[in-house]
Image (tube, rainbow, N blue to C red; front, side, top):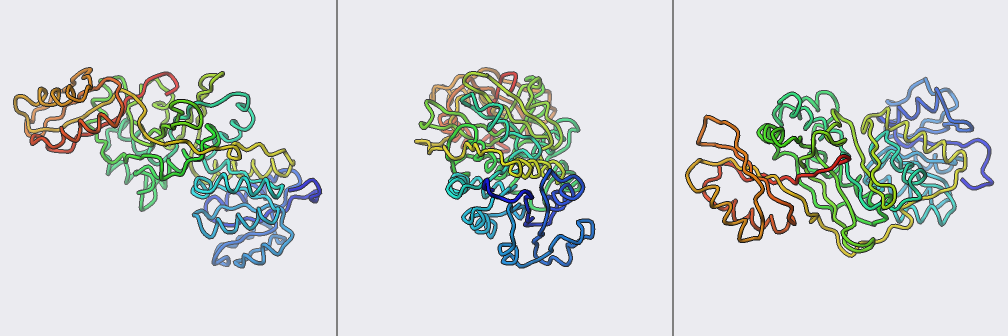
Length: 428
């Protein structure tokens, strides 16, 4: 809103699903000062209508009716790129502020929309688009504004964290852990976006802009699914003092504006780390600053409650007419984006046992200039599908991928090899 806006901030809610209902409840039961919910828009609105919002709220499935009304602030919780993108653009272009929980929209068009809001002297806030109820965007905008962030790392998808922590703590198989997550509402009927890493990479793209000032499209960030991780990997990880989590990671390889290393993938993390301690659907974000070192944020990463709190907090900030300070506005394109950060690696093989397998693997790694750190084999009775692990000293993933392609072509494998980076450090 501009300084000449009316005292009362009139809010239109676009979407009345899980998050929309929670936002409406807070705005009814405990509204921020000078905030009033005036409109609720949703398709098939008659089936959504509830009496708890009061008789003054206008319910409609006509978006033109909402835009024609004297609304000061639009809350977009519909999701998806369209029609949400058209409506957000239209609102900002008309000088009306927007609060959104739409991670895909902000990941794809964040810098453009922030620039539009600035041009028309209104606000765009999107705290709820990343890490649910964790106020990570506010922390970057306010508490950490004096530092220069060099790395962001964490757990950004509650579904994957629930699956992997269940496999770790209960010994569940991947299918069983996924089915449990779906039964509890943590995973969708189609979990592709979560388990393939697409949801987390959209959130990582937003954090790249907000924390690292890097304008990155989600499709540029390499991802690996968690579907290749099995119970056997958790058993070996325990022997190494680690567990396995889906980790989103981004850092400047050299100077800001140069190469950005970014990836979303399952990884081994030390059991004493904050990332390993995240259980169930929790999210964790670890920021590393040039001056202040590491700062860790954790909390509920999903659900109507935490997400709606983040939405309403953004509404309250706009109603207070706080000045906008948005890192997306000064995000710049990296010269290149890759997942080639140098770390040790965990390689798991399941083979038909015979003499010479270790020697064959070692021969390939030697030719590629890769050093083997250790070989780990737990007691197994079978020789027809024998698991064992080779840990590799720190090396570029691209070089390791070439070696693994040669190793995978050998005839002793029962399953394709699994390659997981090994992350170290207290915050990691």
